[in-house]
Amino acid sequence: MPVEHLQISTRQRREIIDITARVADAVAATGIRDGLVCVSVPHCTCTVYVNENESGLVSDTLKLLSQITGTTGWQHDRIDDNAAAHLAASLVGNAVLLPVSGGKVELGTWQRIMLAELDGPRNRRVTVTVVGA
Image (cartoon, rainbow, N blue to C red; front, side, top):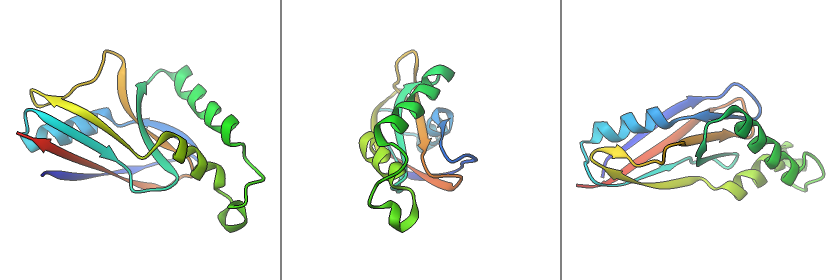
């Protein structure tokens, strides 16, 4: 089962980065033609998801996560002042599972694989695991 680790350096406290091309390259390098790819992050304040990479939607996504989690008043903030990042990551999740067909990740017309940094800037690791034949 081929596994590749991508290194992503974020630059802002909260930002969203399109990692589709890097994941596609990692999948292609495995030589697997048909199967599944799991894209995950081993972090508690970072997430991956699939959606459109349109600037307004990217901004709206960050705004929605901020509105849902707020920015202050959480018990965890007593430790390292990033409870909202932890809570937002819990809501979105840390992995996506996608089909691979013909050696390519199957995505809809506008779908992209997005990494959401919620407590940056940091160096993040994305794990790309491909299974299939």
